Length: 460
Image (tube, rainbow, N blue to C red; front, side, top):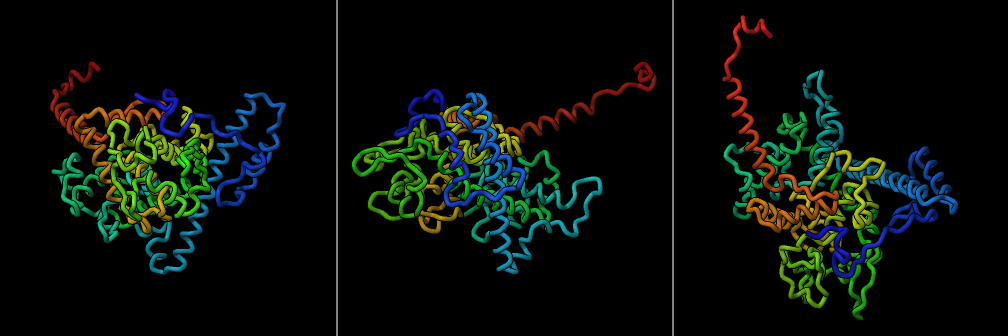
């Protein structure tokens, strides 16, 4: 099976080369941003690092300096993203009193009676937001809430004791009962080590959890469209009108018109149409991406679909920072020294939902749409339905033990983490439910085992 290191031409128009060396004079430059205003101590250290890049340093010393600089820059980027999101939230809530009252941060648990020995209300809210971010990044960017956007009712949905996780996508279109049951079970499993499971039906929980999801979606959009874009585009090319291949740069994605003109066909725009997009026959999903002239003849290839390296590179940007995708392309799986989502959430493998959500993020990245939402405001692409469609096929492939699906997870884990361990895959929830039954049976039989008498107890 192909791996990032083993394939000299992982997909058409791309070659594997090391990421560009840091240039001290431009190391603070990022698209559409000014030099980061960071805390004084970190700024001073970055200035020291700039001065330390001198020709008399050994290769090892320069490598160490570079690693520290990249780690600090990743941390600074996350810091700035967080400040920007807080500013947007504050401005939005200031302009909307209703939203301010409903969505105000850190006041979800007011009046909640808590165990004095347990976490505080503020800690519970922070944990719920953190789990919301993890869910949006690893499992799904959307909840099955229908058209009413009723997050409260989603979490208050009664659990169906007869629900089979393998039936998650089996209902007719428009019936979200199974979708909800599947997601609720997925969230419970994700938080199985958290006390939060006991609070899922509390009034404050849906707001805090979806706060975290919204934060992650905004952060993800900003990261792939700006901070991480140069790294994600490493060595990606497109075929110009004269037949030559041109390296893709962030400038080629600067405007909606640019993205549509250059990349419309690659994300499935049908020839001769302005807003009709294919769902499966999408060139940029496939490892062996065809020439532009063959887009119209493309049929989904199950052995190569979702293996275009740009999909896992987007995920790497989410979990390891803006500069990490280019490093992953050459087999560098190391985490930055600073804070990152992979370390924070102990992410060690991908989920089937990870692949599906990165697929829709890649479509968004090259689309005309400016904001990531359930239905694209410009293209009309239904990202929510596409996500469910992609996850349905991957999950069913794993349930049916089809080789393409198992190899797909192995490919992604090899690309992102350097290991082909697939874990439990789409059968995770079903297998864990079986494990719980087995543990319950073992516990019951253990409790029926004979006990020693008082006289025998004296011998121990």
